[in-house]
Amino acid sequence: MSKIALITGATSGIGKACAKLFAKEGYNLVITGRRADRLEALSQFLATEFNIQVFCLSFDVKNHEAVINNLENLPVTWKKVDVLINNAGLSQGLDPINKGNFDDWNNMIDTNIKGLLYITKIVSNWMINNNKGHIINIGSIAGKEVYTNGNVYCATKHAVDALNKAMRVDLLPHGIKVTGIHPGAVETEFSEVRFHGDKERAKKVYDGFEPLNADDVAETIWFAVSRPAHVNINDLVVMPTAQASASVILRK
Image (tube, rainbow, N blue to C red; front, side, top):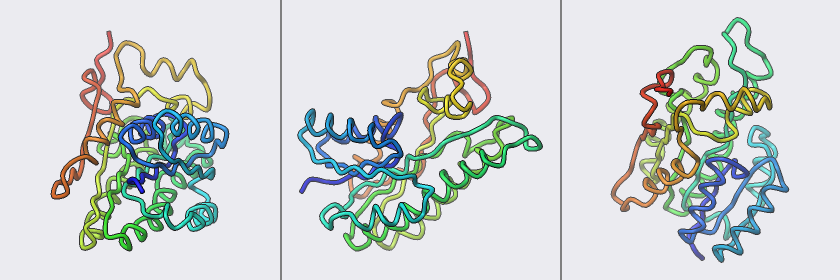
């Protein structure tokens, strides 16, 4: 069987771009997401376009029981995962800490931190049993620095940064690679989700400069995965040329 990549949050953005690129490179895929119709459409496209096998799992990573039920019931051959891409994540709200929304906070913490942990615990044990594996954790420039009103989202991505380092240490004896990829501004559904579906407000985030696109990040991830066995990219920040830091962007 070909190599297998498991990609969370594959229905859009970076996750979808990764699915296409890894399929192009000959990987069979386990793709997860909350929108079953999108997963199925993507699965059919990838299988037809790249002649690979795809296994779809529709669930929300923040649902602990759903994670366990879906992953543990995978056929044994599909548990030989070579690459895990912890991509599922979101930002909601852009309010100062004193005006934050509890539901937004819980959604970010439960998805960005706890969801990543739920997935990683199960898949890392498969990798240990298989004596191989590479875990890619999608962080953010928000995990390296804090910006105005980013408070809880930044905190969750700082947690991803810390967990990435912790995984690297804990899984080192098992020969498992761990890489953190931290993008700056990427034009996906990110801002639309942050602003609760306000497309006009989301569009303004990218006015006046060229942001990264999902393919840019997917190609960066592939670079890390495609290094020789003795090489690990521990940590990589990728930014648009127009962005110097989380809050400094040159707009024209």
